[in-house]
Structure formats: C-alpha cells, structure tokens
Image (tube, rainbow, N blue to C red):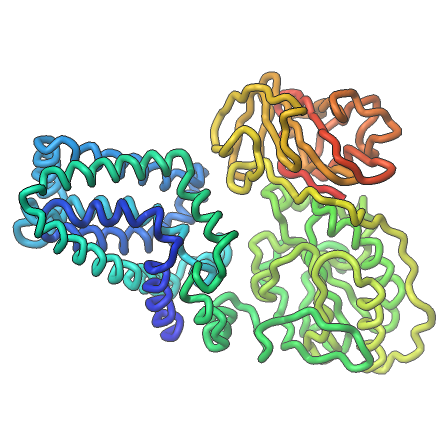
Amino acid sequence: MTLLVLFALVAGAGTALSPCVLPVLPAVLSAGVTGGRRRPLGVVCGLAISFTFATVALVYVIDALGLPNDLTRTIAIVVLAGFGVTLLIPPLSARVEAWISRVVPGPSRAGRDGFGSGLLIGASLGFVYAPCAGPILAGVITVSAAQDFTVGKLAVAFAYSVGSAAVLYVLMRGGRRVTDRLGAYRGHVQTAMGVVMVGVAGLMAADLDLKFERVIADDLPSALVSPTNELERSSAVEEEIAQLRGGHTTREGGLQEAAAGARLPVLGRAPEFTGTQRWFNTPGGRPLSLTGLRGKVVLVDFWTYTCINCIRTLPYVEAWHRKYHGDGFTVVGVHTPEFPFEKEASNVERAIAEDGLTYPVAQDNDYATWTAYGNQYWPAKYLIDARGRVRFAHFGEGSYAETEQAIRSLLAEAGHARLGGRAKAHAETPDPEVRTPESYLGASRADRFANGPIRAGSQIYGAIAPSELPPDHLAYAGGWRISGESATAGRDASLAVSFQARRVFCVMGSRDGARPVRVLLDGHPIPDSLAGEDVRGGRAVVSGQRLYRLVDLPQAGRHVLSLQFAPGVAGYAFTFG
C-alpha cells in the first residue's frame, strides 16, 4: 500500500502537467491570481478535499441515493459561473468574501486573505478535475462500485489529489507574481478573470471540455497525454494493484491469452469463487469451490444472459460439458450482470433453462469473482488444471477448436488420455461485415446520438428524419425517461439507429406486462422474411427483460432501424452481429 500511495502522489503531479487538465486550468488560474493572498492555498486545499471525496465516497453516495451520475459536474458548473459573476461585480465580490469568511473560517484574517472563497472554488473544481484521473487511479480506487470503502483507497486518492494540488499551487503562485506587477490594472485583471470563469462554465455546460479531452485522447500520442504512462506500466505497481483488486498477475503482466498446445504454460494460481449469491445446477443449490474441485480440469466461463457474444458461445460450452464431464472435466459458469435486472435470480434461472445449460452456474452480482480474476470481458474463459492453476485463457467469441484442444491437453495431463472424438456444437456466428459498435441507451454510456449529449431525467425530443441520421448514429424522438442505464418510453416515443450489420439485437423489457414495439426498416414495416425471431407482423411484443432479436438480413448492409414504443417499455442497448 505504501508503494501505491507514493505512486499516486507522483501520478497526481504528472496529471496536473498533462493536456487533460487544460480545460480546467483557466478556471484554476483565474481563481488563484485574484482575491486575497491566501486564495491559491484555499483553492488547492478545496480541490484536494473535494477530489478525494469525488473519487471515493461520492461514488457510493450517488449510487445509493439513485441520483444522476453528472450531479457533481452540474454543481461544479453552477459554482464556477457564480464566482465568475461575483468577480465581474466588485461590490458583490467584497460582500461574498466577507460572508464566506464568517461561514468558512480559515487561517488568520481569512476574509481579507481569500482562503474561504478559494476553498469553495477549489471544492467545485475538484469534481470537474476528477475525470482527469488516469487509469492508475481508476484501477486502484474505483475498480468496482460494489467494493467496500477502505482507508487504503482514501489514502491513495488523497495522495493523488495532493500531488496534483501541489503542482497547481506552484502555477497559481507564478501567475500571482505576474499580476502583482500589474497592480494598477488589478480591477481589469479581476474582471477578465471573471469573464474567463464564466466562459469556462459555459463551455462545460455545453460539454465542450469533454469533447476536447476526447480529441486529446484520440489524436495525441499516449506519452504526451499522460506523463505517468510509463509509471503505470511498472511491474511493482501492477502487482500491488492486482493484490488490491484481489486479482493475480504473472511476470508477463497478467493472465494473458495463451495458445493451446501439448504443454500449456502456467499463467497463475486460480482465484477461488467468492462473493457469489445463488448457485444453479448444483446438488441442493450448494456452492462449489475450486478446492473441492481439485483433481478436475475446470473451465470458468464469465457471461451474462443479454450479451449476444456470450449467447453464441454457450452451445460450445454446453457441448464440452456433455462430452468431457465423465472424464474429470467441470464447467462453472459465472454470471456477472451488465444491467441491474440481470441480478434477479429468476431472470438468470429462466435464461439457463432457455439456453439449455446443464452445468453449474453461480451468480456474481457484486463482481467479486470477476474482480478476483481481474476480468474485463464478456465472455471470458479461464481453464484451470487439476492442480488449481490457470493454464489457458480466451476472451470473446471464436477459437473454439483451440479452447477444446486446451481442455483435452489438460485432461491428458490429469490421466484421461482416451477422450475419443471431439464435441459437436452448432451455433450462430457473427458476421464479419459488422461495422456498428454496441450502442447503449442510458445516459452514463450514451454515445453517437444525433440529439446531442444524452442527460438523465424526463426528456422530450424532436423528430430526426432517418435520412439525416449519420452512419452508426442513434436518435431519440418523443417523450423519454432517461436513467444512467436505460431509457423508458413515454408518449410518442421512438428510436432510430443507422447500422451496418446483418443482425440487430436490442436489450429491452417491460415491468407492466406485454407491450408492443413497432419495427420499421428503412422507413417501412419490416417483413417477416427480414425480421428476427422476436418480430412478427412488423411488431415485437416486449415483456421480460432480455435480448430481443429484431433484424436478420440475408447479408450485412447499411440500413436504418426505427422502433416505435408503447409507453413503459425500457431499452438498454443495441448489439449487432
């Protein structure tokens, strides 16, 4: 933990010098070079405290209260704009400084020193500065919202914020020396800085700072984007991060995908199943353990029942289970949900039955086992030998022959040499011409919407003609209630997506009984010959929360799919295949 704290301190300082901080820097400098002489100290103190709170505690508070994910950003924008206006009106600025000095006591002569106002400005900037935290902080502090709060996480976050604050303090002190030489023009400088703060707040309200950060991330070399990139690849830090997450690394830096062969490499000790809920297809619903399965070859398959990539692999996994179960082979499916409704045991049990799975499946609702493996993918397969060591891993679809060969290799090592022929499975395969990526409908991951930024709350959108929809973009129309993970249809609700694929799937559900969704392809009701199995007569009937198959074309092509929803139907994501 000591190494992580020291590393976070250095990484924080590096972040403050990276291009990522440029959208925030004008507001920081504007706040620090005006007002009392202790205002820069107040700004960095407020930033350090609020940044720590934003990256650790507030994540849990917002999730527990069901508040919009961008609430802190909205508050920060309002505070920045408010202080910018006060700088533009000197009498108002003096009144605010005097009031803050009484409400927020600071060092001696806080009112004249500006520490109190700086503290509040810094606190607002901390919530905006949080997205600049690089992968190292995200990996250590917010591995999963389901993990428990610990003092260690708080210490790492605080060290990161102190490192950033120290660099920003130096920048503000340097800027103040320049403005001190312009004493006769201090009033004009204060007005200019007020304009800068209001302008930055306006740019943030229009999400232009986020767009700027994305341009940096996309177009600049990684070494310029974050001076801490090389540090983040430190093997010692990686090992501590893995231990904090409950995962394991190897000398090569993690559980890597390995080619199957006669002698498979040892990738690490297999983590135990942990933090699971219900178990299915086990005697009495009792949980299994890798210790209890010692002596068997075990395939751990991470999946979730609305993931089309997972669904297409299940026939192979079931075929391997049936073929080799009598030879000392066991499959354990670990169902780790992507959407909240996938945590419901009844939904998982129904999906297991519909997919014809007979091997054991565990619910991993809190991502505990997922985190223990350091997993990042649906689907993901980890093959464990009879001694409890990971010997092979594969992520995503495909490589079925290689995976089966790895199973046979480990069974042969365990003394089961007479395995006969290979398993037989028939499954749907993805179309290689798919160009449209998975598209989420909730505000937290919405992207490529022609409506502009998608925000949580009740919204009414104007219609966008399908002909005006850019490739791979989506568009809402009518009334919608948007949450972080989903969008629920209101009056006259519709949704269009321009796609390049052969098949289209959508995760949908209704808690108020069966509801119709009208399906149109290129502006016309989709004929049954082109419709997926959940659409007949140009309509899909949505009831349970699951993956619905909407389009099944003879070959991939560019089309526009339009869905007209009955009120109460919730949509979560489009996938394409």
